[in-house]
Length: 140
Image (tube, rainbow, N blue to C red; front, top):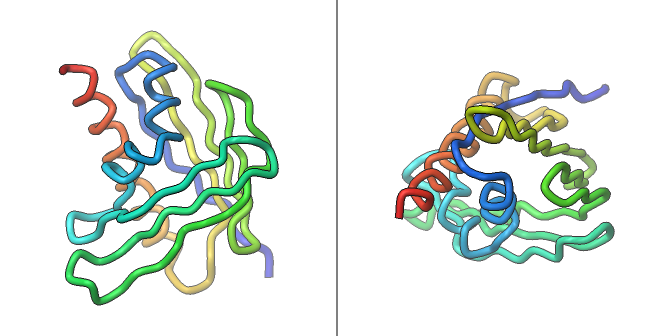
């Protein structure tokens, strides 16, 4: 069975350098990487280079569930592109500066456990939280 590719996107009203940095910095990742308010990322490591690895520990705030979202970077183009492999699946994150901010799109392989809609909603929620995080940092 081939995986369906899902794309989510948002526009972040901030300069590309700030958007990029927030996406790849562990302290930032711990603040934005959650699909809902009852989840959080408790630890994050990033070795941002081709062949480097990353890991984010995602846990339910009540301690009932947790998992490591981890993988290996396969392609990095600073301020433009991150491609990675995770658990036999792939994802591509593209950063495209425009007039109103940076368009960030994430395309990833679906998995069979959850519906396409659930996966799209979860990843979209994380991306929306990422945008709010970066924009809030902008205003300080």
